Image 1 (cartoon, rainbow, N blue to C red):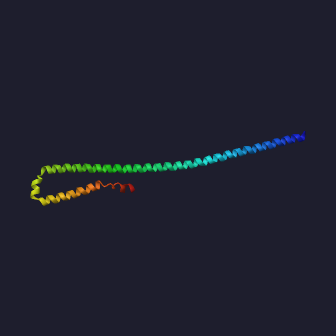
Image 2: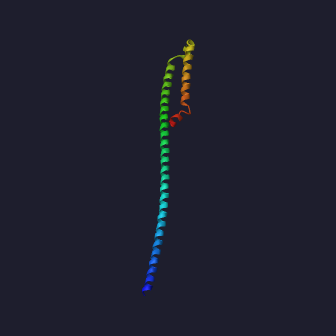
Image 3: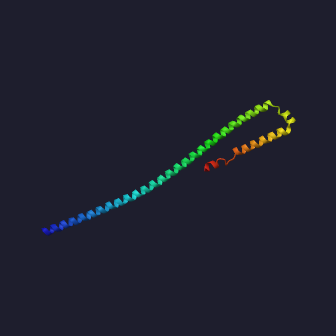
Length: 140
């Protein structure tokens, strides 16, 4: 009975050692699988973080461009209001003066004044309608 018991106990010991090795190997493979999943998750998090930072930068750039546009609109509105006031003032001035008699009496003087005013208005119009006027502000 002693040898048979030893053989049976030895077999049970070997079976338990084999089962323990198998269990440890399964646990190690699970740990490896979880480590791979963890590294993928870390990589995904970094990609997502970079994407969010890029989106935030684009949004901030858009807000900056919008602010510049609003400032330009406010500036143009101010210029437009000033131009309306000037037009109103000029209409009142022309209503008080008889330009026909003045043009007949001092034609060269009137012609020079009108030419200078026309050149100034033309320059202001070119400046206001320049399609590249906003490019310089955005790139700075």
